[in-house]
Image (cartoon, rainbow, N blue to C red; front, side, top):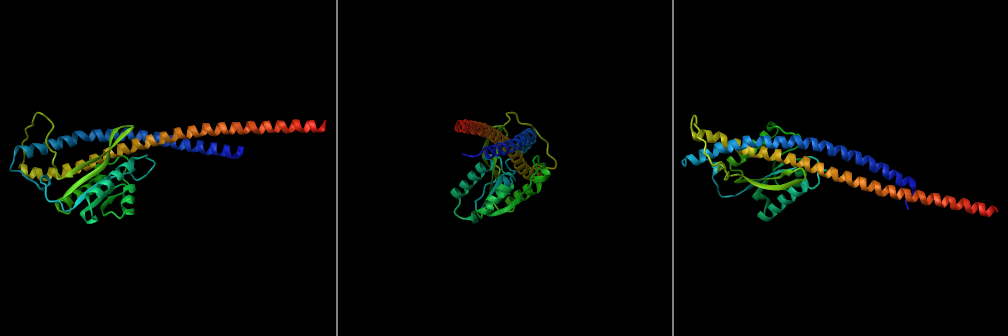
Length: 286
């Protein structure tokens, strides 16, 4: 049986750990609130951009763009969004597991695909398994601005335009609620789902013409999808970390209760033994 000093030391160390996890839970809850607002606030812009692109594509059948047309797939690009730190439960593990299963199922050789990674966890995962990493970005802010991801998003879209890749998929955690995040896979390029969900078509006037407007808007739309997924992923990350830290705090509390019970039992046994020894000593003197 552990000594009283050992048990007391474990109780104190667990209490210190609980304070840390509780503080991390509160910080993550605060960050999650802001990240959720950022993700929801970006949706109207993305939807309006989609509406304009859809209006051009549907109103003029002569308008075409390489980003709207499927082509023979020689190489696939995968855009994977993870975090830079752990302690977020299954947040990183779920998306990386799904991504790895996908490439194992779809590809026989590393020459058939390339990876664009956001986050140190995803970067280390790919590097450890010798997966072909084309581009990466580490240290993205907890509340990222578009400027933080613009260069990577622009370069990724340009890879498709330059036919370095023939299709692009994105893997990230979609924020459902504070306690639920869903691994999501979406095809970004070519753009095939631009049909407007609105029942009423809005009339637009284009200057100089629809073709030139589409030439500018389509890359922006693709980049906005990447940024929107990043915002969604960040909200999921903070929610997952908040849940993980709450679970850790609860487990620490249970451990402290168990250790306290063990400490009291050991202390009671020690006191009983001392009393028995005193009574035995007194009896021997008589």
